[in-house]
Image (cartoon, rainbow, N blue to C red; front, side, top):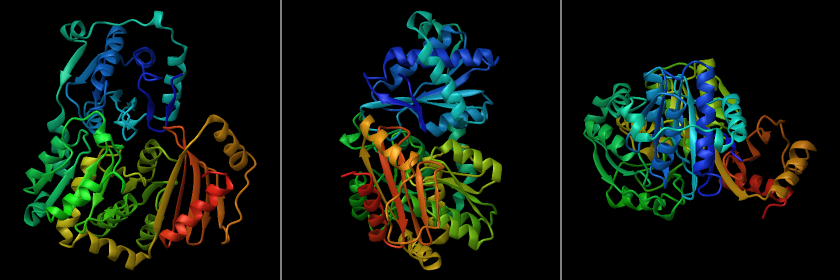
Length: 470
């Protein structure tokens, strides 16, 4: 079965991510486009560095071509946000990217985008999923890739310059050139290196690079920028006496940061710092948007500036929609994805990295000092996050206990309220805890935030014990 989650369709290679299923997804999308009368307008497609990504995209495009859908094919591995940007700039109705983002190396998948360069909404992905699962192999038409190129149905494009130039226009390059920060980049064997080098060299930064080769196994690490995977970057920042270390996930839509002392800066801290920078240094006005498992530090900053913070379910499509609805300044999630008003609707690790370097250059302060000032002004808030693999039986058991029967642990503090918007979230005067099922993997996650790491860990453990997780 083909199953779309919060970040597109992702599956284990050779299990559900197969040529047959890839062709079925393509056929379902092609039929949708033909019904909508936009097959001639076409779609932009790209792929990352994962195993089978390019081959999978060719299979995907051969079916689109066989159905008479025009394809703009980016003929080199590229960041996911570049495809989203191109969909928006060329005013295309759809786009697609072969990637499993930050999932383990044995996974791959397909993300779908709609007009404006947005993550496809749930009603779109559900409709494509349902139709794809009904299609039998004998119904699918295809056209050889080279023949489709010769016929002009598949057109090779290179939108990289337009994408990178758009970022450079939005960043204060003069401030960065004046400061000339020293940076260590860790693309995590993914697709961000060329783009980030182009942007940062244009700003005259001094740069060192690690983990830049093409490795479909991502150095045998998870291609997600977190404290466990960025140990090499921490050492490199200290060794090169850099001002900052910057990492991006496998398809470059998420960001990880190491400060000048070699300490990991959480995605929550990065998001809060950038929101504060946009409000106070760039003098922007507007709310912030975060998902339900992201820091409430944004709420404190927003309130202090006469703004509000909008809470949405997990899935960046919800953040994008709320950004537009409320004309928000920034939107983001605790896993490292963020977007800023005026850029693409989806998350973009390259743009976020560029804005962070601008913030450091304009402030003239070390990143560790900026974090310390943040806590001095708004109080300390620290998060804890754990996840567990789930069997279908265990998932059903937990769902019944927490979501159906709506039972909760006996916490040692009074709760203000409970939300079932996405999972079960319990709000306290000085923190919160949430338990929810992953939308991209067969896992369950528990997040918490409190004034100290110890308190946050205690909240997670309390919830984990309640649902009998080890």
